[in-house]
Image (cartoon, rainbow, N blue to C red; front, side):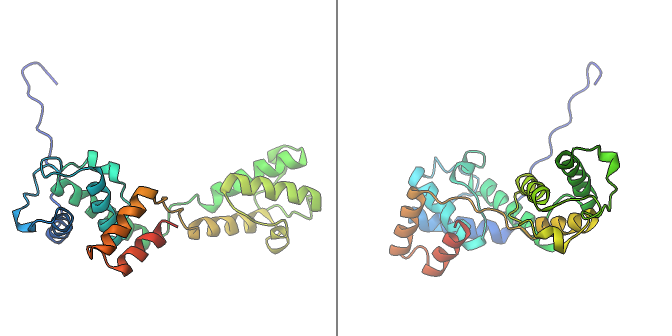
Length: 223
Protein backbone atom coordinates (compact mmCIF):
# COMPACT_ATOMS: atom_id res chain seq x y z
CA UNK A 1 0.00 0.00 0.00
CA UNK A 2 1.47 3.36 -0.97
CA UNK A 3 1.66 6.42 1.27
CA UNK A 4 -1.62 8.26 1.56
CA UNK A 5 -3.79 5.25 0.76
CA UNK A 6 -6.36 4.17 3.29
CA UNK A 7 -6.97 0.51 4.18
CA UNK A 8 -10.22 -0.90 2.91
CA UNK A 9 -12.83 -1.35 5.64
CA UNK A 10 -13.31 -4.93 6.77
CA UNK A 11 -16.49 -6.54 5.55
CA UNK A 12 -19.15 -6.76 8.22
CA UNK A 13 -19.93 -10.32 9.33
CA UNK A 14 -22.99 -11.82 7.69
CA UNK A 15 -26.08 -11.58 9.89
CA UNK A 16 -27.46 -14.88 11.14
CA UNK A 17 -30.64 -16.31 9.61
CA UNK A 18 -33.70 -14.73 11.17
CA UNK A 19 -35.10 -18.04 12.40
CA UNK A 20 -31.84 -18.98 14.15
CA UNK A 21 -31.56 -15.56 15.77
CA UNK A 22 -35.19 -15.70 16.90
CA UNK A 23 -34.65 -19.14 18.42
CA UNK A 24 -31.48 -18.07 20.26
CA UNK A 25 -33.17 -14.95 21.60
CA UNK A 26 -36.19 -17.03 22.64
CA UNK A 27 -34.00 -19.47 24.57
CA UNK A 28 -32.13 -16.56 26.12
CA UNK A 29 -35.42 -15.05 27.27
CA UNK A 30 -36.38 -18.33 28.92
CA UNK A 31 -33.01 -18.60 30.63
CA UNK A 32 -33.16 -15.01 31.92
CA UNK A 33 -36.90 -15.30 32.64
CA UNK A 34 -37.70 -12.15 30.67
CA UNK A 35 -39.75 -11.41 27.58
CA UNK A 36 -37.64 -12.18 24.52
CA UNK A 37 -39.07 -9.07 22.84
CA UNK A 38 -37.17 -6.94 25.37
CA UNK A 39 -33.79 -8.38 24.32
CA UNK A 40 -31.61 -6.37 21.97
CA UNK A 41 -29.65 -9.05 20.03
CA UNK A 42 -26.70 -6.65 19.73
CA UNK A 43 -26.47 -6.15 23.48
CA UNK A 44 -23.72 -8.11 25.25
CA UNK A 45 -24.56 -11.12 27.39
CA UNK A 46 -22.77 -9.49 30.30
CA UNK A 47 -24.96 -6.38 30.11
CA UNK A 48 -28.00 -8.67 30.01
CA UNK A 49 -26.96 -10.17 33.36
CA UNK A 50 -25.60 -13.50 32.17
CA UNK A 51 -23.29 -15.31 34.58
CA UNK A 52 -21.34 -18.55 34.11
CA UNK A 53 -24.19 -20.83 35.17
CA UNK A 54 -26.71 -19.10 32.92
CA UNK A 55 -24.21 -19.28 30.07
CA UNK A 56 -23.87 -23.04 30.53
CA UNK A 57 -27.64 -23.39 30.56
CA UNK A 58 -28.08 -21.27 27.42
CA UNK A 59 -25.50 -23.25 25.48
CA UNK A 60 -26.85 -26.60 26.71
CA UNK A 61 -30.38 -25.77 25.58
CA UNK A 62 -29.23 -24.42 22.20
CA UNK A 63 -27.09 -27.52 21.64
CA UNK A 64 -30.03 -29.77 22.49
CA UNK A 65 -32.39 -27.92 20.16
CA UNK A 66 -30.04 -27.75 17.20
CA UNK A 67 -27.77 -30.77 17.65
CA UNK A 68 -24.67 -28.60 17.85
CA UNK A 69 -21.63 -29.10 20.11
CA UNK A 70 -20.86 -25.50 21.09
CA UNK A 71 -18.92 -24.92 24.31
CA UNK A 72 -19.91 -22.30 26.90
CA UNK A 73 -16.46 -20.72 26.53
CA UNK A 74 -17.29 -19.95 22.89
CA UNK A 75 -19.43 -17.07 24.13
CA UNK A 76 -16.24 -15.16 24.92
CA UNK A 77 -15.70 -14.92 21.17
CA UNK A 78 -19.40 -14.37 20.46
CA UNK A 79 -20.49 -12.00 23.24
CA UNK A 80 -23.90 -10.96 21.86
CA UNK A 81 -27.00 -12.96 20.95
CA UNK A 82 -26.58 -11.87 17.33
CA UNK A 83 -22.96 -13.08 17.06
CA UNK A 84 -23.79 -16.25 18.98
CA UNK A 85 -26.67 -16.96 16.60
CA UNK A 86 -24.25 -16.51 13.70
CA UNK A 87 -22.01 -19.15 15.28
CA UNK A 88 -24.96 -21.52 15.67
CA UNK A 89 -25.88 -20.98 12.02
CA UNK A 90 -22.27 -21.66 10.97
CA UNK A 91 -22.21 -24.89 12.98
CA UNK A 92 -25.48 -26.00 11.37
CA UNK A 93 -24.06 -25.22 7.93
CA UNK A 94 -20.91 -27.24 8.62
CA UNK A 95 -22.96 -30.17 9.90
CA UNK A 96 -25.21 -30.10 6.84
CA UNK A 97 -22.19 -29.96 4.53
CA UNK A 98 -20.57 -32.89 6.31
CA UNK A 99 -23.75 -34.96 6.05
CA UNK A 100 -24.23 -34.07 2.40
CA UNK A 101 -20.76 -35.23 1.34
CA UNK A 102 -18.27 -37.84 2.50
CA UNK A 103 -16.39 -36.92 5.67
CA UNK A 104 -12.89 -35.66 5.09
CA UNK A 105 -10.44 -38.54 5.19
CA UNK A 106 -7.22 -39.45 3.39
CA UNK A 107 -7.81 -40.96 -0.06
CA UNK A 108 -6.91 -44.60 -0.59
CA UNK A 109 -3.83 -43.61 -2.62
CA UNK A 110 -2.32 -41.69 0.28
CA UNK A 111 -3.20 -44.48 2.69
CA UNK A 112 -1.49 -47.00 0.40
CA UNK A 113 1.75 -45.02 0.53
CA UNK A 114 1.66 -44.96 4.33
CA UNK A 115 0.95 -48.69 4.44
CA UNK A 116 3.82 -49.39 2.01
CA UNK A 117 6.25 -47.58 4.30
CA UNK A 118 4.94 -49.40 7.36
CA UNK A 119 5.06 -52.76 5.64
CA UNK A 120 8.61 -52.11 4.43
CA UNK A 121 9.64 -51.33 8.00
CA UNK A 122 8.06 -54.54 9.25
CA UNK A 123 9.70 -56.62 6.50
CA UNK A 124 13.04 -54.82 6.77
CA UNK A 125 13.17 -53.91 3.08
CA UNK A 126 13.07 -50.77 0.93
CA UNK A 127 9.73 -49.20 0.03
CA UNK A 128 10.49 -49.45 -3.70
CA UNK A 129 10.60 -53.24 -3.36
CA UNK A 130 6.88 -53.24 -2.51
CA UNK A 131 4.48 -52.49 -5.35
CA UNK A 132 1.30 -50.43 -4.80
CA UNK A 133 -0.80 -53.61 -5.15
CA UNK A 134 1.64 -56.03 -3.56
CA UNK A 135 0.21 -59.35 -2.41
CA UNK A 136 0.89 -60.10 1.27
CA UNK A 137 1.37 -63.82 0.67
CA UNK A 138 3.86 -63.12 -2.10
CA UNK A 139 5.78 -60.90 0.32
CA UNK A 140 5.95 -63.75 2.87
CA UNK A 141 3.91 -61.87 5.46
CA UNK A 142 3.30 -64.59 8.07
CA UNK A 143 1.03 -64.41 11.10
CA UNK A 144 3.64 -62.73 13.30
CA UNK A 145 4.60 -60.09 10.74
CA UNK A 146 0.96 -59.60 9.84
CA UNK A 147 0.01 -58.95 13.46
CA UNK A 148 2.83 -56.41 13.79
CA UNK A 149 1.80 -54.70 10.55
CA UNK A 150 -1.87 -54.47 11.54
CA UNK A 151 -0.95 -53.18 15.03
CA UNK A 152 1.04 -50.37 13.38
CA UNK A 153 -1.87 -49.65 11.04
CA UNK A 154 -4.25 -49.42 14.00
CA UNK A 155 -2.01 -46.99 15.88
CA UNK A 156 -1.63 -44.77 12.82
CA UNK A 157 -5.28 -44.54 11.82
CA UNK A 158 -6.98 -45.04 15.19
CA UNK A 159 -8.60 -48.34 14.19
CA UNK A 160 -9.13 -51.68 15.94
CA UNK A 161 -8.63 -54.13 13.12
CA UNK A 162 -7.53 -57.70 13.77
CA UNK A 163 -4.71 -59.44 11.93
CA UNK A 164 -7.25 -61.54 9.98
CA UNK A 165 -8.09 -58.39 8.02
CA UNK A 166 -5.14 -59.33 5.79
CA UNK A 167 -6.97 -62.48 4.71
CA UNK A 168 -10.08 -60.55 3.70
CA UNK A 169 -7.99 -57.83 1.99
CA UNK A 170 -4.93 -59.75 0.75
CA UNK A 171 -3.01 -56.97 -1.01
CA UNK A 172 -2.08 -53.35 -0.41
CA UNK A 173 -4.64 -51.92 -2.81
CA UNK A 174 -7.53 -53.82 -1.22
CA UNK A 175 -6.37 -53.05 2.30
CA UNK A 176 -5.98 -49.34 1.49
CA UNK A 177 -9.52 -49.15 0.12
CA UNK A 178 -10.78 -50.95 3.23
CA UNK A 179 -9.02 -48.51 5.58
CA UNK A 180 -10.27 -45.52 3.56
CA UNK A 181 -13.83 -46.81 3.88
CA UNK A 182 -13.49 -47.24 7.63
CA UNK A 183 -12.19 -43.71 8.03
CA UNK A 184 -15.04 -42.27 5.97
CA UNK A 185 -17.65 -43.87 8.20
CA UNK A 186 -15.88 -43.55 11.55
CA UNK A 187 -17.98 -41.47 13.99
CA UNK A 188 -16.39 -38.43 15.56
CA UNK A 189 -15.93 -38.66 19.32
CA UNK A 190 -18.47 -36.49 21.16
CA UNK A 191 -17.38 -33.74 23.50
CA UNK A 192 -17.69 -34.63 27.17
CA UNK A 193 -20.47 -33.07 29.20
CA UNK A 194 -19.09 -31.66 32.45
CA UNK A 195 -20.65 -32.14 35.89
CA UNK A 196 -21.69 -28.50 36.06
CA UNK A 197 -23.31 -28.67 32.62
CA UNK A 198 -25.15 -31.84 33.65
CA UNK A 199 -26.50 -30.18 36.81
CA UNK A 200 -27.67 -27.15 34.83
CA UNK A 201 -29.27 -29.43 32.26
CA UNK A 202 -31.21 -31.28 34.96
CA UNK A 203 -32.29 -27.99 36.55
CA UNK A 204 -33.55 -26.80 33.17
CA UNK A 205 -35.65 -29.97 32.85
CA UNK A 206 -37.05 -29.58 36.35
CA UNK A 207 -37.96 -25.95 35.66
CA UNK A 208 -39.65 -26.88 32.33
CA UNK A 209 -37.19 -24.81 30.31
CA UNK A 210 -35.99 -27.93 28.51
CA UNK A 211 -38.00 -31.02 27.61
CA UNK A 212 -36.88 -34.49 28.59
CA UNK A 213 -36.53 -35.40 24.91
CA UNK A 214 -34.26 -32.41 24.28
CA UNK A 215 -32.16 -33.33 27.32
CA UNK A 216 -31.83 -36.92 26.11
CA UNK A 217 -30.70 -35.71 22.69
CA UNK A 218 -28.01 -33.55 24.30
CA UNK A 219 -26.84 -36.36 26.56
CA UNK A 220 -26.70 -38.87 23.71
CA UNK A 221 -24.46 -36.52 21.72
CA UNK A 222 -22.02 -36.22 24.60
CA UNK A 223 -21.72 -39.90 25.44
